[in-house]
Amino acid sequence: MKVTPHVAQNISGRASAIDGRTTRHAGYVISQCIRKRIEEGFGWIKTVAGQEQTKFRGRERVGFAFTFAAAAYNLVRLPKLMAAST
Image 1: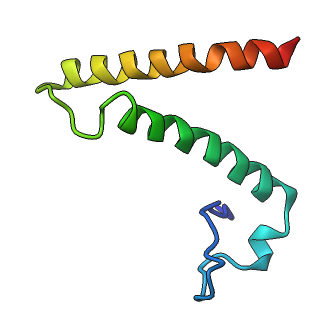
Image 2: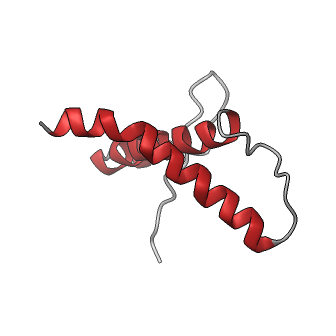
């Protein structure tokens, strides 16, 4: 399919599975910026919203708790997003 995964490159001195053929493209940089934005949301949900270990059983209740935490994260981000748009 000729698709290249945009996983994070290991630049700490070890060999990395991602080399310059992937990282030289502008799309890779954009992909990593978007990845960071997504990971920040999941990190907030785990730490601040207390979802690192669920307290519920069942797919519906766990899904509701995650959706509720994601909505809370969006409400926290909303003032910053509104200030940036003006």
